Length: 444
Ligand SMILES: [Zn+2]
Picture 1 (cartoon, rainbow, N blue to C red):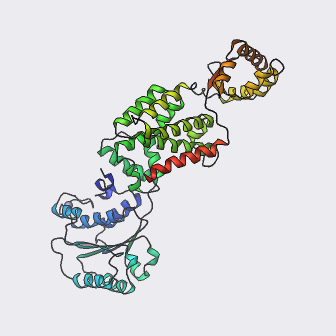
Picture 2 (cartoon, protein in one colour; picture 1 turned 30 degrees about the horizontal axis):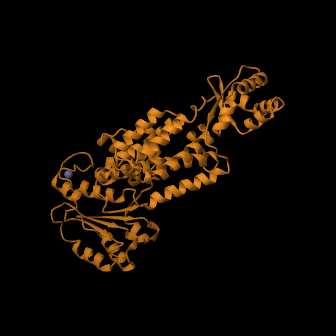
Picture 3 (cartoon, rainbow, N blue to C red; picture 1 turned 120 degrees about the horizontal axis):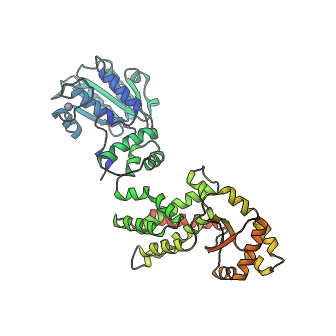
């Protein structure tokens, strides 16, 4: 389903740009319709759509007060279908010759075949030769009453001033996110899609003013899964196995390939990690997460991506990775930065106090990492199972809790959990691996 073609604006109201809607409405409501228009602006900003809408508006058979075309009469339908003899679209990029314009000039005086106005839409008009411009200028100087010219260009500075001065100039700009969201909502409503406003904002923000790019994100049912990717990552982060596996199942049922899910997730994690490492702009989600957890998760997903091609059941490595991950540690601690900083800053002191009591215990603790406090437990990440077994021996645990309670002047309980070891020097490796994995998919 190509939503971009299906939802190409057919009325002034459907155009993305507020300024263009207002300018077209005003010009078409004027007593005499302008005979020469010049649309300037980047590709994909609606210049051609606007030109066709004008062609319909001036030729529409339905009597009404509004300047909008009805889109139902024979004239409107012929123009929409591209079969109207009197609406000529010339691509100056491929018809540069003076002959085309000369022919246009010769025939312009002939009355329209069926319509009220002959409409000439000349795209990329700056590509015309100097001679062709001169021929065009002669026509623009004295256009017959039945002719309308709509010139469009991405490079208006290349046009002779004599041509520009004859035209009603309308400047098209890249759509603002708010304008794109308005257009996306039109598609969402017509297609009865369910897309959160936050998701539309994300899409509009990433589309760089292009409705064509923005609407691509809505084109496939799986596009909606991509939008929900952050939800899925949030569930993984919270170690909510059921929610994460259910989502996976529904994405799989929608036809998404496990590898594409993994690659999208890895790319997203990579981005979050880069933001956390200070390589990008601040983003809310990045500020809330623990980079160590993200690195651990990314590494597991990368491993799962590598296992897919050898797996009898394509989705199995991903499901196993999700299940293992959710069981591999506690949910992240509730956000209590103040309390966390109170306790975590005392961790070196706790180690110092343990040292005289038991040297090897202190050495073991140095290989761990306190990550936060949850439900009264100090959560400590351990990187090896045998370390965890050792630290959980009752006498050691009691010793650590006793020392910690004394130093923090409050009763402390400790919970150890196992997590894959990743040191800061691995950051580059993870990003590199993620890029390599991502690169394979791009070339697939
Ligand atoms: Zn009509």
